[in-house]
Image (cartoon, rainbow, N blue to C red):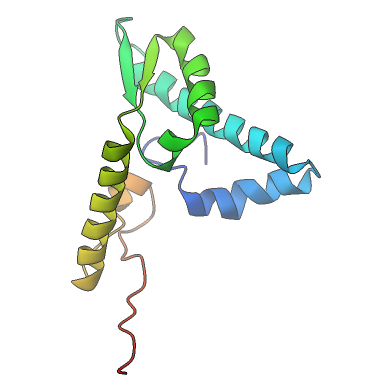
Length: 142
């Protein structure tokens, strides 16, 4: 998976289905599992950044960290240290912007799901085909 060309994702389901069982099988303590998983994320992001920067000029580059990972100080610190030698600065926007972006994306995904439109693009995820993700629960009458 990691040697495949873009696009690909470190999506939560890949982590919980593929990576976490490997880390868990190692019999580590919870803090060591978290540190190992974080290191894995950092190394995969750094490898992708190196691929993207291959052949480009050596001028400084910025990486905008958003999503849940942007709220993880340990992850951001590790990522910053890993990317610094590559000339990449990690920037984290304000918490309001991070949360707003996440809420906006979730609302957009909900509208697409409600309208039965594609929510998962193969051109972005590397999957075989586009799909509609999520579930629609309409509840019951009272």
